[in-house]
Image (cartoon, rainbow, N blue to C red):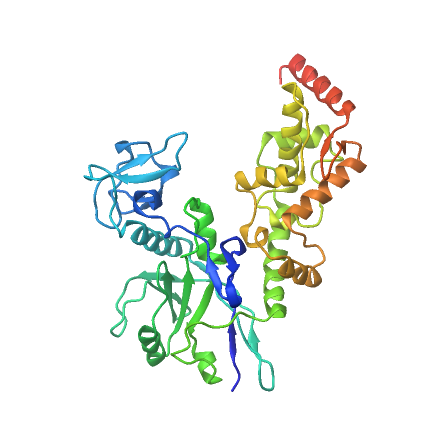
Length: 406
C-alpha cells in the first residue's frame, strides 16, 4: 500500500527536534496562562480586534471573546501589551478567552480574505510516485459553524459547488471520531495548526500564518481515498519528502521574489537614500523575496541607522545580525523563509538559485555596498562601518535640502 506524506508549512522558529526525533513546540499564544495570553478582544459589533488596534484602558470598549466580561487594554511602555479582565477578584482572566479569540479571528480572517493555501501530499511507495504539491486556492464563499450532516466544522469553504471543511487546531488536534465522520461524508477536510503561534504575534503575522504558513494537513481528501492511502485512524501523518517540500517552497518564493522586485518603496527614507546613494540602495541581491518590502526599503533602513548613529556622534558600526534584528522588529521578514532550517534552505536554493536566507541576503548587500565604496570593515567578524566620505556627502545633501526648503 502506498503511504501519504501530507505537506505542512512549518514555522521553523516554533519547532525544534526533541529526543528520539520527536517534535516539541516552543511556548506559543496558547502556552501562556491568564490574561497575559489574551491579545484579541471582541468589539460590540462582534469584530475581533488586536491589542494594537484599540485605545488603552476601558476605552478599548472590548469584551472577552470567551466569557463576555469587559476587558481593559494594557498597553504600558514596559509590559507586553495584552487585554485584562476588568474587575476580576484575583486579577486573572477566564480559561477560554485566548482559545475562543484565536478561533474567532481565524474564521473571520478566512471569511474576509477568501483564500487559502492547501497542503500537499505524496505517495512514496509503489509505482507511479503520485503526488500533489499543494497550491493557493481562491474561494467563492465561506460559511462559519454551519451544521453539515450532524457535524459542525469551524468553516465550510466553497468553490465551484464543492465544499472544503476547515478545522483550526488551537489546543488539541482533530480526533479520530470526527475524522471518521469526514470520511463517511467523503468531503475534503483540512486542519490548520495555530497552537504554535507566539504570544506576541501581530495581526498581519497571524493572518499570514492562517492563510499560508501555519502547519496544515489533510484530515480527509476523496482523491487520496481513491488510492486507499488515507485512513480515518491516521492522525499524525509523516512529513513530506525534502524534494516535494523544496519544490513547493520554491514556487512560493518565486511569487514573493516577483512581488519584491515589482514593489515600490514605502518609506521616504528609501526614496531619499536611493537618490543619494543609488549604487547602494535598491540592489537586487539573492534572497530579496524573503522580505515583505522592496529592496530599497530594507537596504535604506540599514544604511539610515548607521547614518543616524554618526550624526548623533556615535560610531556607525553594524553587523548583519544587528541589521536582521532591526528588520525583524519592523515586521519586514517573510516568516516562511526567515525560519527555514539550513537543510531546507539548501534544498530550496538547489531548486531556485536566486534564493538566500535573509541573513545571507543582508551579507550579500553589505559586500556589494563595500564594493560600491559605501561601507568598510570595522574590525572583528562581520563588523562594518561607513566610509568617511559618505558622511560628508550626507551632510552636504542635508545642507542643500535645507537651503532649498525641502
